[in-house]
Image (cartoon, rainbow, N blue to C red; front, side, top):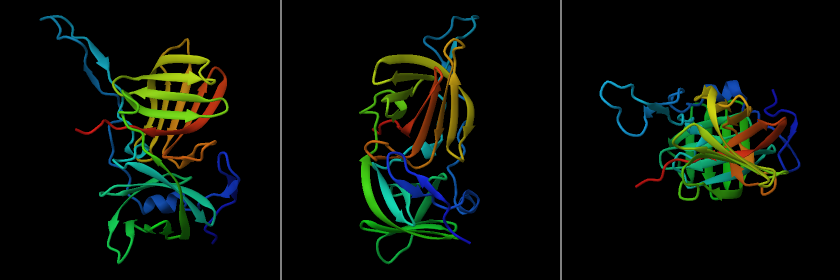
Length: 263
């Protein structure tokens, strides 16, 4: 049986073949991130309530799936593979995170004579220099390192838990780290809005989140998926695909979760 499916386009580039690390086969061989809380936390707001009075509470931002984040890695690496396919990876001492067109996977370090090797079940990733080989129960990909990008940090985006962006027309979305609120900049900065949101779907294992507006008079939906994504103009790699629907328009782009700064 063939390892690879029909030709599919890469955003901003020529049509590419999609990776047939099929979801069922690949996920069965990979451990996903530990389950995280799918319900927004609630914390005390402001000063303590008066004795006998009802204590005011305010919702905090929900915990996002870890597969939307670099996991402590300092950069994302894009890989161009044969048969044609684009992958994104992020490496730390603890693990390697790998994003494909079908999802995201976490692999643990494995013993190898030279280079670096990571494995989880039937899925393995071996790299030496700018070359890598990806194998699963379904077959093998030979890959070459292409473009890399430094991971966004809270120093660059203060107070932001997730940042997404797209082109034509240029737009950005930023999720606040401390409350369920997002900021939108649309149409090259011609329109801006800061709106509350609510979580309508949270799948930590798949790295998928759907948010909806917290205001009836300004509806929108925002979908985040942990899948390999490439900026349609620069080709820079990201670990998440972002789809924003608002005012009858749909905007598509890429994004990344941003963890708190250490120290």
